[in-house]
Amino acid sequence: MFLVDKSLHSYYHKNNMSDWSDLSIEILNLITERLYYIDQIRFRMVCKSWRLNIYDDIKYADKLPWIMGYSGKKKIHSSLFYLYEPSQKRRYLLKNKILVGAELRASKFGWLLLSKKLTKSYTCSSSSFFFYSPFTGEIIQLPELHMEDINRATFSTAPASSNCVIFVINLCYRANKFCVSTFSLGDTTWSSHWFNDYHGHGPLIYNVAYAKGVFYCAFHAFDVMGAYNPALREWKLHPYPPVFKRPYQYHLSLIESPDDGNLILLSYNYNDPEWVFRFDQSQMKWFRIENFMSGQSNADHEQVEIENLNNRILFYSLDNGISLPAEGEASKLANTIYSTSFRWYRWCTSRGGKGGTHQSPCPQIYDWVDEGADRLWKVWIQPPQTR
Image (cartoon, rainbow, N blue to C red; front, side, top):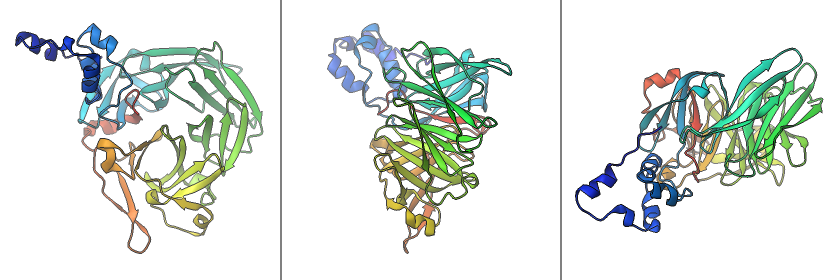
């Protein structure tokens, strides 16, 4: 996929210098963990010994998520797509025919979850699901899923882990019921469960997210968030914060925090973030995040406790979102919000002189992407095993 650079190895041979293959594995790993992700791939591909002995679980120099741009929206139209790397501002053109006609369902941990419609009739429909890693070219095929339609889908952990669970939900608006299907890697079939009377949530789900064993659904037309626990096969409803008396007036995005297990709810209007909340699973309550909030305070906010979510970065798009700690190279981006939609960057929200908030420009780490990318549908994608 990416070009393999063996010049480093050949240079030392031509100049009669000590062979790098004589270096201990410990030293090689110390070198590798200081490289950017693409350079790590090239470094490991120099020889078979390095591919086998340089371990994967390393701390990457570039923790920021990349951007994937492709032709299409709901469905991917072309086998060609781009990856944009923010740390060194590089663009890579890739190609894979398996993507043509597929629908992108989720993007996490360096993997894409995609589906393709196989059959459709008045009585039965089926889809094939598969994982694809643009970084390695790996594909993991999943069993066929029989479901009338698919509203949203996501997964819990990286597909390489033994506890990865795939989650698919379908709302049958006319029948006033919905179906939840889950699949654990290693199983042979999907597990599906129907629930009656979903309280008129409406046929639209903004997005779904996973936190601490539970899959959450951000509904569009009602005042609650849905939650499904696959271990208990249990469906619950949690009211939104009081400010959302009419949720359909807002765009809502559920954002995951893989490192601390938090679930973040971001509301935005015309792509401008307004409020940020954190859902505390242990207390089943919402906290308003003050240092990210740009909306005006009102009486409804007084009913929600306030806290800070310091030294975090929020990334969101119409399809996915992620919250990451602002560490290392990313420390200068603490308490900022980034979107792939309409604009490439950046909201910095800070306290004003009279207790209010104001916005100011942030470091523009994604605005270098060429103008042609505006015609592409864009999602966030993490380098594999970033931590």
